Amino acid sequence: MANYWKSKVLPKIKKVFENPKKAAAAEACKAFDEAKEQYSKEFEDKRTELQPKVIDVYEASSTEIKTLVKEPKDSTLKKHSAAVQKFLDELAKIEFPGSKPVREAALKIGPAYLPGPMFFLLEEVSTFIVTEEKKEEAAAPPAEDAPEKNEEETSGQEVKEKEIVVEQEKKEEMTPEPSCTEKVIAPDVEPPKDENAPPASAAETLKPCE
Image 1 (tube, helix red, strand yellow):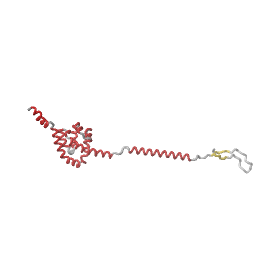
Image 2: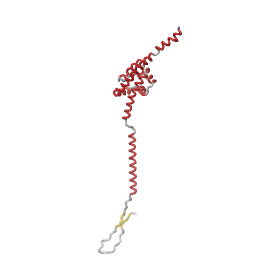
Image 3: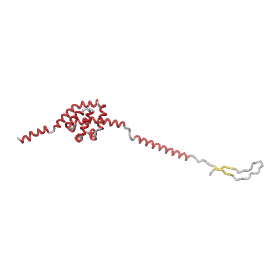
């Protein structure tokens, strides 16, 4: 009789009471899956209203939550369950579709037992984050365009200056040097005697420079 109890009855009792959280989790996940379509519709209807609120909640969250939003993993969900619970609290405050029933279930059994609903919410949150990042990238001017443009303008000015200097040098080489003359004073020579002629004086002549 004792052997029968240990081998047959006791295992069945243990199985029933082994992990009540799993049964509660299964029930919560089933209810959430049935309401998914409704939550998806609410996301589309309230997207504009939710956008700034979700961004604020995300920015105020820890690094672990930001990583979980971008890369949802079971291991991360289990490891940072306390941070996840706090994140659910903040989502419920802004009335994020589907966050309230998941938050209530998570308070009873823990977020790690609700991977399906949690990943659904995280995926919806990520759509708001990706949209915001794309807006910021589109609004930011290209950082490298201005320096490249300045370098091109500078090099263009340097080339022009070099061309001007070369042209000036060519002009200087082609321009002949001005001729010069020097005054040569001829020695005094006695002119032929002429009574009507003026007095003799030294004659000045111009002699080209050698």
